[in-house]
Length: 137
Image 1 (tube, rainbow, N blue to C red):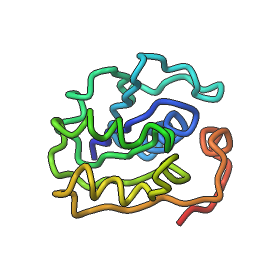
Image 2 (image 1 turned 30 degrees about the vertical axis):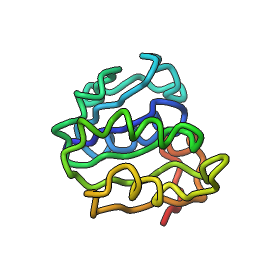
Image 3 (image 1 turned 90 degrees about the vertical axis):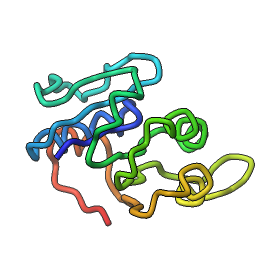
Image 4 (image 1 turned 60 degrees about the vertical axis):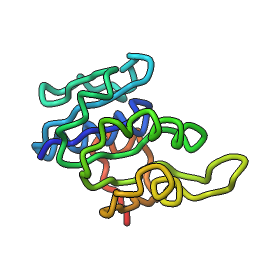
């Protein structure tokens, strides 16, 4: 499976490592082309860092992992590259100001997105990256 991850912070990097460990090809997008938080692990060969949203166009799954404050802005910018793939929301929290949940933002910005799921904790990025057993729903 080809997975596109929107957000290369601590949590995005950890999820990229977990997906790569499971044998998936991962394209990891960063708005500023910085990819430095892999919790002491090297970037696997099946993780491709990029700062180009167009590189996510042909993915089988998108994972939204940007901070809640930037979730809407990122989806708006990414929308022209969206190809109706399922979207797994991995962003925690609510949108500042509007107090909307991330799924509500997806409905606003990507109204054609019908396959939406939410990853919920508890889990810690550093532990996921180090392959420490955890639980998620």
